[in-house]
Image (cartoon, rainbow, N blue to C red; front, top):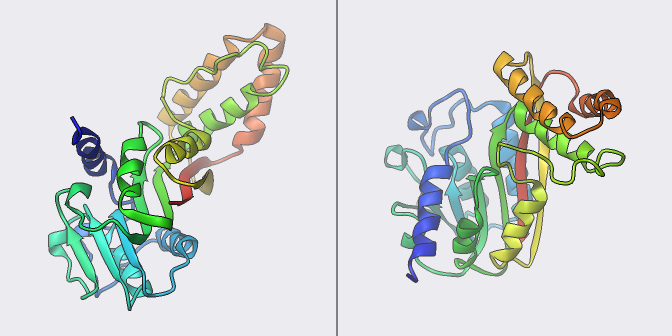
Length: 266
């Protein structure tokens, strides 16, 4: 029984952690040869590195992600080391001397005193990530910094987040006591609660708004309309139009994209 939480965390790491969507395959990446990553992804890696505040001699743990992130982290700790768990196509990579590639999940990681951790695409709002957070926490020293980001989410997630925000305000809140959300998406506050429950002393999560796509997908549009309709069905007729107007003012134009980002201290 004692091993089940760790086994569950390993399964989450394998199932939830995927390289962020980009225009190239991680199979073609090599640690000593930068591929043409999209500028948005490069910027995401830079932001993650900035949050970790590395001095250059730390022991860093990377969970998930791609070769570009591993290269950036390895370069940020020239006097330290990087342990990478479940990196995509790890057998294809030519790694620097200070990088250890680990297969077999988090249970295969040796040591419990890492100075920092990068969670790349290991964060999901569609499931309980507390077991994963808890397993990572056991590998960190007290005060270690953690930074991470989840999968890019499209229009539907953005609309639902806006809809829930409006539903929490008056006069709508008195009619919508429990917002309807068939997606099972957790909010940033829910992810913070999971981090605290996993043993972190500080946690800050937010939804980062990404540049809009040039056009909205018709299927996403239909699903987003259903999300709003699930709320208006609970409202008096005279509040339906105002509710829709308030939601649309938050949603904006274009195909909005969001990404859940986290910061934490062990």
